[in-house]
Image (tube, rainbow, N blue to C red; front, side):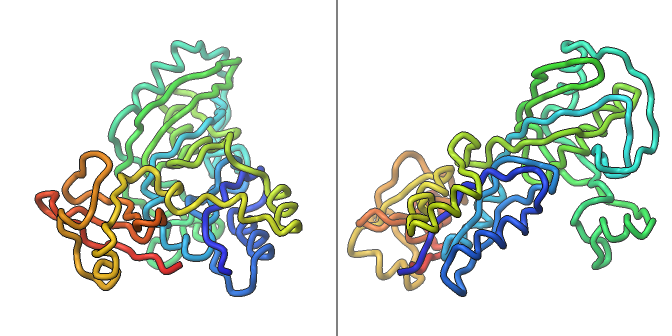
Length: 302
């Protein structure tokens, strides 16, 4: 029987996201597809959803989910990587940064904005990843990208260190945010620690460490740790196909309003979870103009 679902891993600082996927792959039957949603830098910790089997098809719907992080930054130090792992470019004494001043600085970044990606990142320019160019001593112009900060709160300020929580859109670099906050304050800044506490429906308190996944796999119980497709897509509204329409929908025929029941209001052009009458998710659909029908965006073969 195929293994399908999403493992909510709690990544520790050190390994890459790719390293984590490689270790999960060793726990599964050969040729099982495995991949992660939402890369974490090696120094970062926290939520790392690892999709297994047919669940790898839900990557696009997870990557667009809002993300929440807890970060610690240091004022007065600027590095080439925008975190403490990099080479120091400049360093200044700052004294204490009061919590209310820190909140004022953070609040400046609330809402939509433009962020310039760091040179030490996996983005490609001219077919070459930026971090490869950076390690070769080259710096190239990067185009700013639209990002959005949904919420940002200062949690603790001690000396030149600030710990804050931020909820943000896809594509937001927290170390760049730390760099920009430090630049606004005047002394510079870089990220010291980062934990992702939430990605869509995946929460840190519900996750498990890799060692626990390995133990469960050794006992033949890894499926117990996997989140179902329906739960992994819980950020999308749900509809249930009526029994006579499931086959037609799987074969590419859109659902008319009479073919399904919806839980709540549907937004034109929005994505929905499509459940079979038996309770399993069979697809992600897109609501057609007028909201009266649903077309298949991606069908899952389980």
